[in-house]
Length: 209
Length: 209
DNA sequence: TAAAATAGCGTACACTTGTACACTGAAATA
DNA sequence: TATTTCAGTGTACAAGTGTACGCTATTTTA
Image (cartoon, rainbow over all chains, first blue to last red; front, side, top):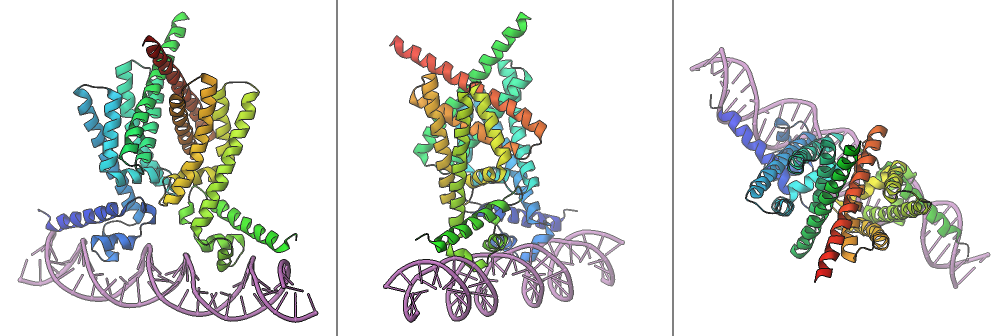
């Protein structure tokens, strides 16, 4: 019951996934990647593709899922670093930038498919990003005693800013990335400060009632 | 010297541009639009395309330029409304949302090509967005007495937030757009408040020296 | 008015695309 | 062990792609 067959199948499936991922680049998006190119890169006959996925779309959604997984690893890593002490914002941004440098194509996939032509893709990517946002939201509520609404709005803004910085980092050299990182940190501080300030002001108003 | 010929040529050129624009949609991006489809939509023979553009890329860059123009109209419109008084942030966001509703495909073009596979396209879109940011930056510096650096960072953050909201608005129904607009306004207030706060704090530090 | 220029057309060609279908050899099952 | 299952192969085909080339009709130029 070891399933030498199922084992081999899983192996070729990975071959396809990896082949697709490896072909993503600044010049090549998933949507202009053909089934034949992927199978060729994987060293398979074109028609073998169908033994694993019914569609390029199905493979694409699998890639997005994998990207989501990688994103969660990123969060775990950031949390670990934060626990060791230091500026939360600074550590988060730097961890994120390292992630982009290490997985540019995974990030590109998320970035592009978020505004791509497939509704299913857009939904899948947004799901991953929402998950990311929610994690941050929980953290902010707990750390800063924010109400749920303010926490979400802040987390949402922060994620948008960081993702956008990531997008810019993809085309930037190392000195530009440094400047970009600085800017992003400042922007997150603006947001954090503003959220706190308006939150406190709201509490003040409420307590007057 | 009226140039009845040049006049006609310009007319067909517009036919091509409009045909391309009209084919953009949620399901169709410029990059998966073929030369033949565009000429067909324009009611021309495929090969006539080359009398006007050497490439689909050349047509695409033209579209991005046109989109930039539309963006500037947006700014002008917002300024006019602001002069009549009211919350600057609220008016800006609402004007932007109206723009998206009126020109969804133009906005989709900018959004997609910003992270697309053509470096020239990415550069062209970023140029337009930078222009947009600079305008806002000037305004903020003047209105809030911010230093150049802080002004730019705030403007940059604001544009990112607004564009991202625009992207989300494309897939949203009218009640979602309302909620999205509210959220965006709050986020811009966070940023404005945080920028002001940290700016004043900086001035305070400097005067201590 | 005669000659040159050119916008637009139609045909043709070499490629690439997705996928239907029949086949093979090895693993799983009975 | 005999039978069934099935991952992977190779061929074939219709559809779509960009674009080279020669033609026509009309405007522009000389």
